[in-house]
Length: 223
Image 1 (spheres, rainbow, N blue to C red):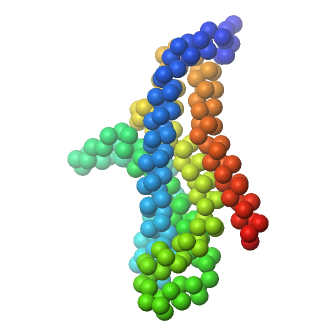
Image 2 (image 1 turned 120 degrees about the vertical axis):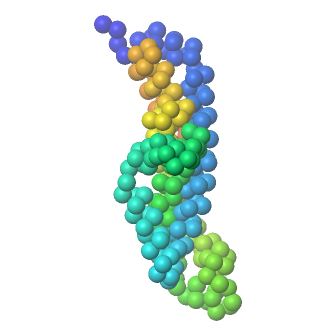
Image 3 (image 1 turned 180 degrees about the vertical axis):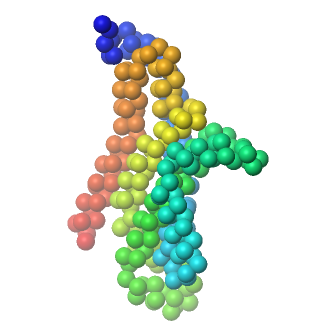
């Protein structure tokens, strides 16, 4: 019986290696764009969640709770199949970017909120007493101090985000996981396809994971 990792299967994969390279490029692009969306939403809703305005805190909490307590697969499915029902058709690349970005934005919002609240209240009060408004105090006083606290968990979120781009496979997103599924389903060479796919995800995620550990060690030393 031919094993799942027979040499001729590896030869077929090497012959069609451009399929995986293209998928790797799309996965990296979606990850970068989605991370930009997630950071923007995370900073905005993190600041709202740390504010003293009840409406702002409730809006932030509604966003975080809804996104964190519904599966990412369902959210992407809605973007891909639900929005066209109301006349909004997004390119599949942007379905992945928005879906993954909005999902991780909720987790980053909690990281930012916790980082802001870890800064002594006196810092904010001193900024307000000097004529800064809330947003200026956040931008120039609070967030720069919170960077040391939030960078390690933010880096971990970036790792999770990269892996979650694989959800695009369910909407034919052309990403790395979709290319692996499509290529291997045509010839049943799943073994080499998933080994290579796992290694390519590792190449993207491992440096970020190491960076997160380095930042955590620095934070412990400077604490």
